[in-house]
Length: 259
Ligand code: ARG
Image (cartoon, rainbow, N blue to C red; front, side, top):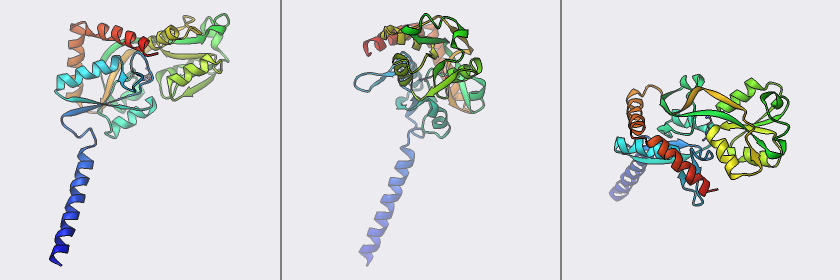
């Protein structure tokens, strides 16, 4: 009888302790690590090598942020469109995913300074190089963009008469473009250049758009000024040490090796 009671208490404590572990073990609450959320379909910003390791420019920056904080970096890969919710629900602590800090997003999360200047480029299949040369040629065409991106917004605003096809990943968009299921795609300049370098059937017609914010920044939960401050310090240090360009070139090289 007494024994049974002890067993019950022991079992109960075990469950309680396990529960506590499950709770504290969920990443963001862990003090010695910082959890990065990214969408690894965006070379050279972030991509996967053949062993499913996530590499890229954003990863290099994130490593430096973690290092300056004395924390270990944990990486979670997900669709771009899930990143903001994951941040708000504490599944991740920061987003580096080639993300433009636009007005809409600023309502729900905070951003660091811009760490890389970028634009948006149109990519087309080489077969269409003669028929799609300027912006007006895209009217009425099928344009692929990644869901929930600034490029989706841009495409819908600029081409109300075109069919905008919003897909979850850049790889799917490029595949559809290569097989002529799409007439064009819009993505970040560096990603577009990377795509044409690794696919001879894709070309850049030279249709470009400035980004409204001018580039990409790190997103963190709203009202976390210390973290923003900390991240800005790392960005400043990397700029002063000319590391941003160096990392970027290195990421371009790595992504071309991993095609
Ligand atoms: N720059 C665009 C945006 O902020 C697209 C970023 C897509 N990133 C990615 N890793 N797929 O909406």
